[in-house]
Length: 567
Ligand SMILES: NC(=O)c1ccc[n+]([C@@H]2O[C@H](COP(=O)([O-])OP(=O)(O)OC[C@H]3O[C@@H](n4cnc5c(N)ncnc54)[C@H](O)[C@@H]3O)[C@@H](O)[C@H]2O)c1
Image 1 (cartoon, rainbow, N blue to C red):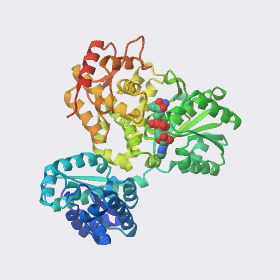
Image 2 (cartoon, rainbow, N blue to C red; image 1 turned 60 degrees about the vertical axis):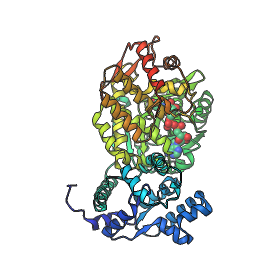
Image 3 (cartoon, rainbow, N blue to C red; image 1 turned 120 degrees about the vertical axis):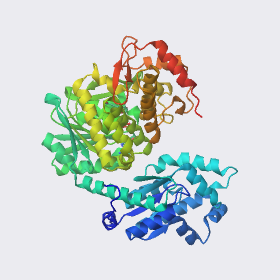
Image 4 (cartoon, helix red, strand yellow; image 1 turned 60 degrees about the horizontal axis):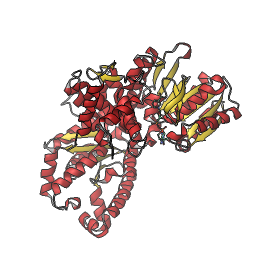
């Protein structure tokens, strides 16, 4: 949109339809002043959720806090916002803490467009200092409390559809910016809804396949699979989290396409990649009479993809596989490339096979039910592709990550770009003899962190370990004089902005010496003849395989990293 050209507010209001505009952000961010002006421009009513709560309770908010406590207030706030959102389109100013509640956030996503008003911290402090009736700031050091609240809440506010950063400019300027961003977002959403889905081709000769990415694909899976395998019998393997959410829809779609279908449900979690589950699922597939030309469908995250894929690879020496990945990690990484396998008691993924799928169907809507932590962890792998060899993609993510998280068109775009990057690496080196190793950027450090925390996912999940690993790989490259410090800082800043960890100290209760850490890195299966292969970087988008890195320099680097005390 051309800067300075007035926004057609009637078109914006029409594009909003029955959705509301919900302003979120800290106390003092200007939600009421901006909200009133925005509502007037859009011809919508303005409602202040806090005022509604006060009117309903016949008490002021400080009084509600004082008499009944914060938990009581939050519950009331959730109900009032749900009622308001269901009533009619409006501009709604939500209380500072309202967006922290997941149910409220989901409700806002269903019924509206959220805008985070993010003023400068100093401006916020100055505004809040003037008003002393904020119950959460009745502490001995209100400034300190405000800074703490801001640090805690910012990663959640950042999930809003739109962020408006404002210095202490006039409210009119903020309103104008909000209208422009709203118009842009609504136009992009309308374009994406009518846009064809994205298709990435994996050109692997006789084993070539398509990766189809877009919303609502589960309901069309039957037609897509019937094109690849007309008349085939299908067996869906899923887990007990994903099954209740998507199995019925997938089965119905396969049935409508005339495909016979059975299903097998596994327990969720990494422990499912075991010899016992491999045997149980394989036997169930044999009982279901799945034969060479039939199809095993993996419906779930990487665990189900790896297990079902390995069963498909070994059953009758190989039956066809369709991946229907439902986690971000699985959509951008594990469902593409053909690696399948299970864990041994001696280590992860030690037993497996290369077995390419015949089709990958990545329904981007399924990511809406994924926990925030799992989504964010998968996003570390998305960033990785930019860092390996595509600086422009990294810059796209820096600019659009909020929309990737919120589920706008940038989400499908980021997934498609990630799959294309993975396909390029796989096609260059299908069985990981050389170039494909670049995909391990951040993973050598990451695997050591996972192993030293005994794969305790309460402390760290794979994607979080990769995030720290990426930051470490860039800092190590900087220390070796390979990469500019600016690039290492930029990587760290982006990881931090989305709420991913970047330091070893971010792992709760982590204790290891540099030597322990080095030993753990040696356990990684990418080690050959005792030598660790590092993936290092000359800059963002310029990663390379570094052989023969001196052990002493690794130890010195780890020593410095483990010493680092966050302030
Ligand atoms: N084959 C490969 O190339 C490759 C690459 C990377 C990782 N992996 C493997 O992938 C596995 C990790 O995969 P993951 O991170 O997807 O974990 P996961 O499969 O365990 O899924 C994470 C959690 O999310 C749940 N879940 C999945 N989809 C959901 C949805 N749409 N809504 C709600 N809940 C949902 C699952 O039940 C599980 O509890 C590891 O075993 C790893 O070794 C394989």
